[in-house]
Image 1 (cartoon, rainbow, N blue to C red):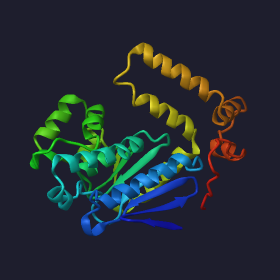
Image 2 (cartoon, one colour):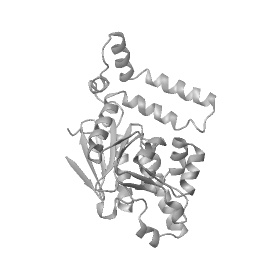
Image 3 (cartoon, one colour):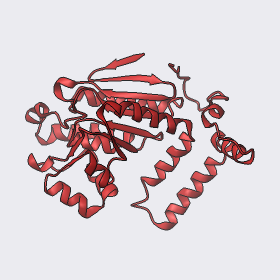
Image 4 (tube, rainbow, N blue to C red):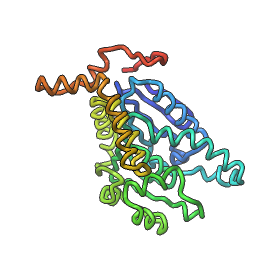
Length: 279
């Protein structure tokens, strides 16, 4: 069943939630409506542990054209811009740090904030038509939507500077060569392969993967000692999980682990309201 939000739609596929940017007329730009919808969906994912992985993509020929130019013309004064970024902080940080694996399928242009949105995912699959561009300096703007956080970590500081300052565009193959995307596939295959990968992640120790993701996001700002402390706390927590119990049992019994079945064998007991899973 497809759930419709303003400029966004979601669909449940077992333990995977599919999110589609759905404002083709505006090339899926980051309108106010889209940002509020994406924040609502992100919050719902945080509260629903039956969602074990996410697949994010855009409808139509463009993944996301970035900022809403109409909004930039009408609300570029300091205070409206400040309000907008305060709101963005409640969306983009939780989305990038979501404690579940996120796969992004990109067809067509991922420009400016649209590129930033794609880079918030853990794995990007690029269709043959994919184009990754920053474009901020064409408008005389500082790169935002966490592109200044994500891109240097993916490609290195020197390459990120060159990409931003020269207003470069990377096609799908270049995105793979630079480490932004994992592979290139025909446009018609992006969703199938992206959803399949999300299911692969969901069938693994998805909650433990989310825990490792949380620590990795701290790795560039933390000392060796701090990283050891994070690993200590995370590993202690991981070893109390159903996923660890299943993984250890499978190893000793010389069989393939069934993490999803192990987790689903026990009711959730996290103090949150029960979520209904749509098949």
